[in-house]
Length: 64
Image (tube, rainbow, N blue to C red; front, top):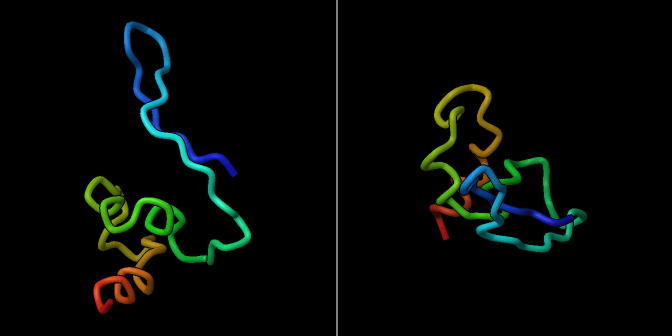
């Protein structure tokens, strides 16, 4: 799977980061955390809510 981050610049989409991810290695935990690390939580709209899919992986990463 190709993971891309982009921004709009002068009306065009500009890829700012691109990364290949082996989807078979991802668990059901939050995919963004698995791809970007805890940095993904900084702008997450569901952080701290019951909809957060990263509660378990956050605990694991913080205990490493």
